Each structure stands twice: as C-alpha cells, then as structure tokens.
Image (tube, rainbow, N blue to C red):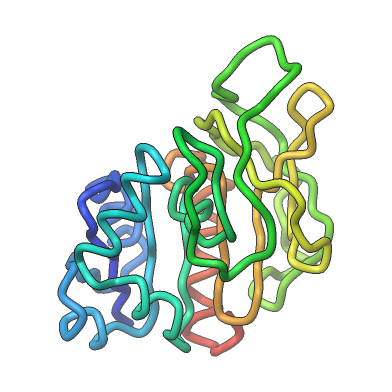
Length: 206
C-alpha cells in the first residue's frame, strides 16, 4: 500500500513520513498531483498559520485535488483544521469546507496553547476502529491555540476536555478523517490509531 503525504511547504513531513514507514507502508512525499494520484490514500499534515496554509494550497493547485478525491485522506493538526469552513486565525479565512464549523481561538482558559498530553474520549466508533481492542490508555499529544467549533455532532468521533472546552480530537466524514493532535508523537495510542487507519484503508472502510 502507498500513502501520499501532501507537501505544500507547511508540514512536519519527516516525523509523519517516518511514522508511516514504521507501519510498513510505502510513502510518497510530494506536491505533484500526478505523483500523488499513484497513492492509495493521503495524509495532509500542517504546522503554522491557517491563512498561510490556504495560500500555499492555492499556489500549489492542491485545493481542488483535496476536495474532490475519493480516496481516504487524513488531516493532522493544522491539516485537520484546514478541512473546516473557515478560520479566525490572524484574519478570517475560508477553508476547504469539507467539515461544517469554524476554527476559533481558545478563550477563558488559563494557558494558550493547549499543549501536552490529554485524554481522548470516544463519542462514536468509526468502521476503521475495532471497539473490542481499543486500548484503555487513550492519551494523545496536542499543540494548538485554535480549535474547531460549531461542528456537526454526527462527524465528531472523539474529543478531549481542556478546561471545560470540548476540543474535537477526531472528526470523520465520508473518506475524510481529521486528528487535531499529533498521532505520530502520541506514543503507543498514536501508533494504534495510525495503524488502525492504514488498516482501514487496506480494507476499504475509511
């Protein structure tokens, strides 16, 4: 199986690439659509500001490619946020509009960013997660100052509580999945989630 890591100049590509390679899948890191089309599924990583990322996606001609693909696509951190309708970060900016909701800054919390380990609580179990073998330890690693709000509850897979703010941790719709945290930095449970998603790709359930 081949996973295409979408390179638009704003992702922690190396750690994502290495995490996927440890799962014994082939990895393509590219911004070239022809090369990416050879992959079975995609990962959209992201580190940085939302407006800069959308500008880079537009410049590389990847917006329509991401919005129209029928293959499984996993957005990580900023990559997940880009799939929502709009963001308030820096300036109001339209996103890819795959998921309903907006990206807003944390307010009324004692510390920004939300950084460190936090427990994921499952709201529902998608087809690529086996409810029977889910680990009891479900902490993952977050680093973000903005989060998705006003989302469709039917698309919320898991969330984390940060000072009484419900932070969407995993969202899913059709062939799209988003993880606000960094699974590649989230220890055994992060490995479990990436493994389950890639296995879901193989089985055609993502």
